[in-house]
Image 1: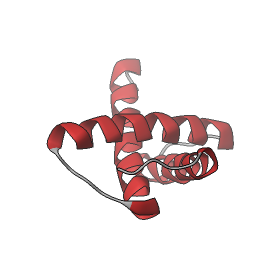
Image 2: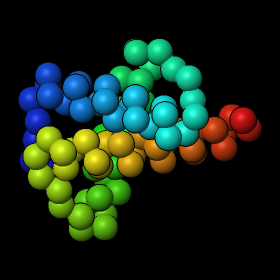
Image 3: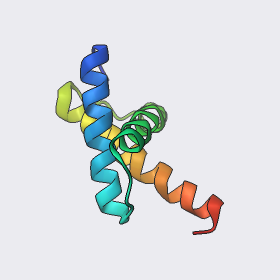
Length: 82
């Protein structure tokens, strides 16, 4: 993935967190969606690099971050026993 600027990174994180919230049926606030999306971007980027997946641009970053955020929320729920 090509690097994004800070503002773009935060926008991707916010959108990815919102999408992950809807996919997993969660109910978070704006700040939590941002945090989940940013964590998802790191998780998704790490997994994508391990698998050799390369996506470029804003949409590529959004797909990777969303997948990572959904995975993060599912693992978080398993840990918390929800």
